[in-house]
Image (cartoon, rainbow, N blue to C red):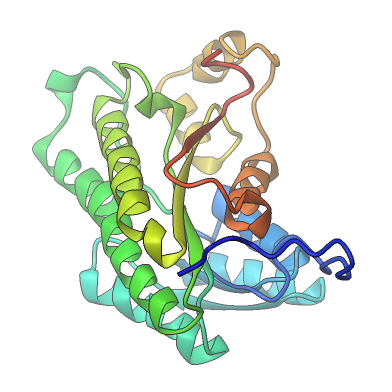
Length: 266
């Protein structure tokens, strides 16, 4: 298979970065996932939003539609294998194909030293943050292969996966494992023209980090102090990186874990 993109300078410009693509997004009811849903639709994709909370999904879907985008939603618990497969299949049922996927959904546990983490919390973070993306990738690859033929997947990792993470050791460990799955998938499916990458966001103003701040006051200030750009990211800025990796403009990028962290890892 020749996976070289066609770059005809005489061809008309696309209507958007993701024009003509069908996108599946997990954790799409709020934060980075909701920002991605809005952005991907603005960039021309038909989007299927997946998460556990219907009220949030419905609100974002209606917002996308009101702005002229094409969107629908499906309830999905990343810890439920059958539910994940059904959610991905729903994209194909609705739109006839799957081109791209953003595996953004995740959960968090109370911050603290490793010896204070509860086994039940460890198991839950494993099921959602590691097993969930694995289940999703397997289903997404099958759907892309059967419909679009080629495509791209982006997993949402964390800058906390790239170093020791004493405040969130379990979360960091699962995200580091996601990086490994990303790299393995990139090697496995490259010959089929399916690219797999990850982004590693730094401090981002989401509900998750506000919950962390409530549990450990001063977290936002500490993260900002360690960020050369001197501020937290807006969720849309993280979604922009995912959109680029999912687009044909990143056609020669696969197996990357891209820091989107305001310079924190520089």
